[in-house]
Amino acid sequence: MDNPNRQAVDSGIMNNTKDEKKNKLPIPPLLEDKNPEEGKAEFDLNVQYGKKEFIEGQETETLGYNGDYLGPIIRVDKGDDVKINVANTLDEPTTVHWHGLEVPGEMDGGPHQVVDPKSSWQPYFTIDQPAATLWYHPHLLHKTGEQVYKGLAGLFYIEDEKSKELNIPKEHGVNDIPLVVQDKRFTQDGQIPYELGMRDVMDGFKGDTVLVNGAIAPELDVKSEVVRLRLLNGSNARAYDFNFSDNLAFYQIASDGGFLENSIEMHEVSLAPAERAEILVDFSDYNTGDKVVLRDGSYEVMTITITEESDSSSSIPEELVDIVQYDRDDVVTTRDFVMSGMGPMVDINGKQMDMDRIDEYLNLNELEEWVVTNESAGMGMMSGETPHPLHVHGVQFQVIERNGGEPPLNEQGWKDTVMVESGEEVRLLVKFKQKGLFMYHCHILEHEDAGMMGQFLVE
Ligand code: C2O
Ligand code: CU
Ligand code: CU
Image 1 (cartoon, rainbow, N blue to C red):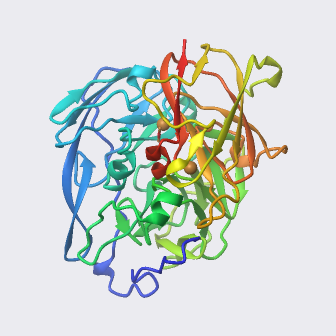
Image 2: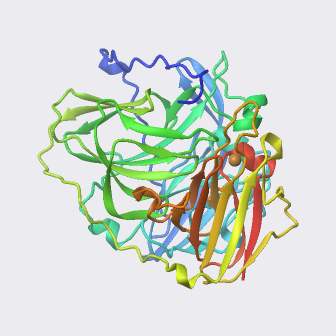
Image 3: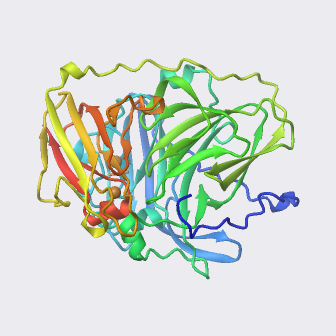
């Protein structure tokens, strides 16, 4: 919405007369769990080259997990012992990072857990956090932006007692819909080369065409009932302001790290790169044939068509889960994270990423307050404003203050990524339950790759 170069794509959204031509929303499959034992799960993930027809008649070179583009959904239960067999079939190294998972540093898949070409990696961990919509993606030093952009990203669902017992839609692909939203810039012949121009170096790589689950302006058919949309902003740099064409109200039920305490009525939800939101949309007052468009600002992202009456009388639950709020009085250490600089010079606390330097030392299970500021304000001649979404590995944190005030309701749940606009100050309460070496960084991938990242050791 902030890119003047972006044009509406010719998707036939408004004149979908030929039904057989429908550009159906692809639904990423749930990855098969190879371990039949209760409480255990094992998955195979192959990192591979692919070819995909995003645009009719044009074959695009891509990357994918177990397929041509994006990856399957890994779904586990809280308490599961999980093992993943990652095979890198590429000619280049990669890593697989579990974004939002609270696992030990050596299982995190950050820049130190390199999977060399034609080799494999077997991380294993126990799921010890509430139900959530997380994701996985590469994290190779200086290469994350390119590998994610080419298609390496997938969702990671955690389910628990609560998520199973809540009265919310749970049928994968039917009324529980994963939505991986990304933007691309296609060349004349339909390729997606990752070549950074001046503007991309400054603000991050933004495309002019938005894809959902790898499809341009797709169509989703639903029944006239409550539908759950699991939104992931899987873009390199673009932030979205999601809303619906007729200003339809919806209800956010989960943030990055799990369910909120109460569902929140909203008309727009903003997601910075890497952020997630689960929302419930009530289509029960709609008639068969009605259409609603999911938009980013006024840009049309996806069309939802009500194709069937529903006999179920679903409703929106008001109360969801209890979140134990950290007590600020228990804070042992306060740390400052100042994000500044511009373009290739972006840094945190005046430093750029060094694999051999540990920036912060933390104690396990000790509550900390992190004061995150963005001082990139006004420095950009090109951009003026430089937002930085800060992401912290190995933990879900609580946002307690935004610019001296209470954070918005939908930030009052578990978060692993928080948007910090130019000139803003955000305060987090954070407690690490896993040991090891982890990263914090800006999730604009071009900033991360330029070195806007630091390391901390939890002991
Ligand atoms: Cu989504 Cu450091 O990662
Ligand atoms: Cu992460
Ligand atoms: Cu940034």
